[in-house]
Image 1 (cartoon, rainbow, N blue to C red):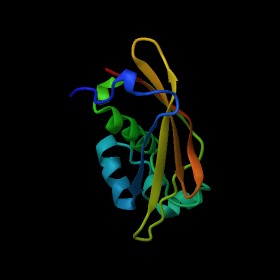
Image 2: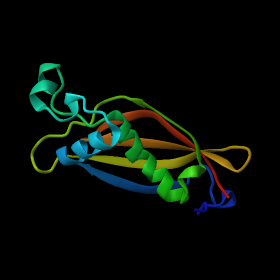
Image 3: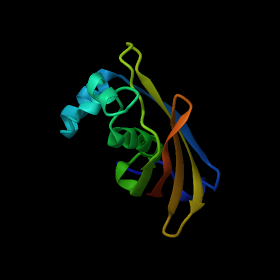
Image 4: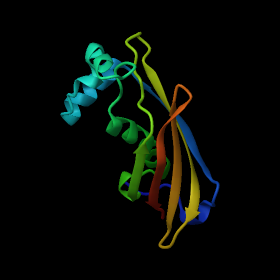
Amino acid sequence: MTVAVRFDEVQVGTELPARSFPVTRATLVQYAGASGDFNPIHWNEKFALEVGLPDVIAHGMFTMAEAARVVTDWVGDPAAVVEYGVRFTKPVVVPNDGVGATIEVTAKVAALLEDNRVRVDLVATSEGQKVLGMARAVVRLG
């Protein structure tokens, strides 16, 4: 793959296309199978309630990965992401109602760095609550 965005085409404040990611209980089961994370808080409502959660919650790493898709889709090459980190602030609650939850992600270029790199700051929310804090990616552009 090649990087679709050139360093000289962006500036601080450049907004990346926003995305919405649906999350259902089936999505969580699929992710559990792919990741090997079968913690019952991600699929067993009774267990999740017993440990004090409001309902089943999405895997933190799943939420983090969905947010990163905004950056990788924008840049065109996942290998262009040279750093990525988040803080988990609130869980994504996924009700068993046939609809599930939605993760909304926006992002913008926050800093121009050396070596054709930019820092992208992301905001991820679900049900109006910020679910990731300090979500930042450093991307090397062409």
